[in-house]
Length: 272
Image (tube, rainbow, N blue to C red; front, side, top):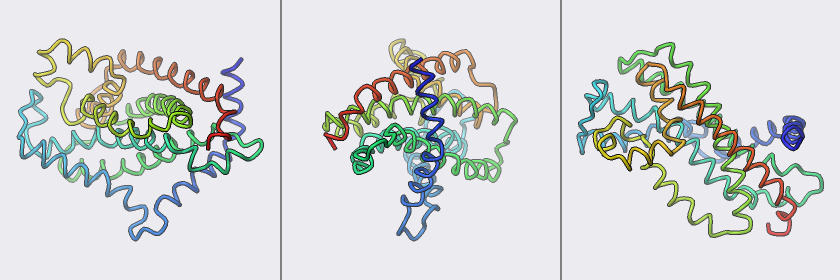
């Protein structure tokens, strides 16, 4: 009953969520000369930096025949970097979202659960706006766009639930334990390098080390990012069995995060 009731609550708040997301996207780049262009420029600049560092300077030798040149590496990197930006931005903003909108929380009858949903959705839209740039890069650099590109849609759904569940947890915890804000950036840095974004999962070092391979397999983002890499870059069917398990796990995280958030939300007004 709890799950059904809360889904109904979210559905009834859909117009409010839409309004909050729209306002958040407009406010994000208000006063900026380039405005929404930063949605496209940020991932491109990050891709340029990581390509220079890991694709040219370090000159990696990966077993994949598709990763022979710096251009190949750039496209591979872009495939995983875009969803990572969505994930990390949601987590960072989610840790501060209840403080930023403290005045709303103190209003009677305001559905506070809409704030984490707004954060994740706004960053999801930024992710979607970055996809055309990815497609343009692929076409311009001679990399084919295959029908497997559409398999990124179920991967997006999995990532949305996983990210939202964690955002619920972090938003609720940060209200009572403000030190968490200082830990998030460092933990995300560790998580970034513990996820196959700048390197493929098939990298020799990973395959030859049982504990590293096991650690990556236990990381839900490994399978999510790999899903995008297979759909976008490799042009093949993602590992659907791994994605099914990850989807179930993501739903568990989502409902646990939402349940915890709902249990402690009455204390938010006093803390913010």
